[in-house]
Length: 387
Image (cartoon, rainbow, N blue to C red; front, top):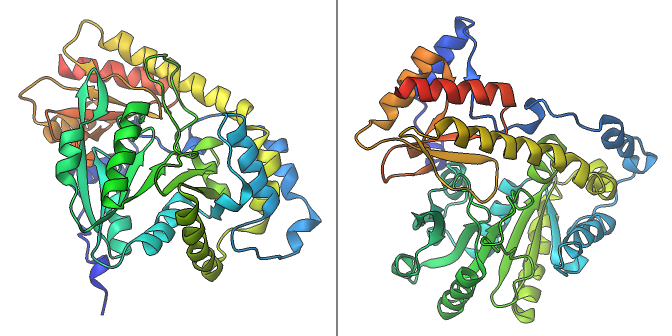
């Protein structure tokens, strides 16, 4: 009766079963996995966010396949402030980055053709690949004080069935950016093998300033056909407003052909709601105000993590940006058992590294988005749990 796409296991894993059991007993859990900014205790400028929605323009439906031109112009202006210059005809609106991925997979891949994803990375990608009938393979990121792309291993992962490569910039959960030299090599390999680049930059604005990083957005990448994803979910901490975008760049002929096809794809769905499109220019003007509080939280929690783990055998890996941090556990520890015992005994919920395909050693992933008091107490219990 059901398609093979949804032939998933619905059995709860031991970690989630333990979490649900504790919640049923009304046990207070310190959740260090928080990914929903609207549940993280931030003070949003409510009136300024809601006022643009109170407009009679929202009663008028004027479908535009690529999205409202004023909304797309506002996105271009946002990139221009970063010295990245694109025009509105290169921008396509979608309701979410997940939907944008689906549009791009439909554009670039036939069923069973392959898209390369970084490893480690976010587990959602596996579901997106399955639901769009494409094959998913990985290339590894390696850690040497910072996470980086290994060119030889990337080359070894390429074969004739691969039609697209995804980079997550910064990556989730490693918090690593694509550097200029890495992009140069990526462009060269993608040109040689006629592969498109998809750059997921939903966390792009959350960069921890460091001159050594030299992070680079791919929104202005002209060397190969490139699709750069962003959205309100992370950039403004407003996942409920359901608006994302794709910037198409690269050689002009490739861009033209891609946009012709994408226009038909997005016109088929017309999924982006009118109120969010009309409000986008006003919302983007709030970006600095909203991000200031979020970035402040991320930096404070990162400092807490390093301070509390200093002098212990627990090692926070270096992170360049994003909302997450990786904590390396000592050798010989069973990651799943350690995390399960942490939850059962100390009521601290973290994600084990294998959730994100971290397969070299034992790690846990913590969200820097968590309220500071929760985060600090949770890390204290983690340190005490190991001792």
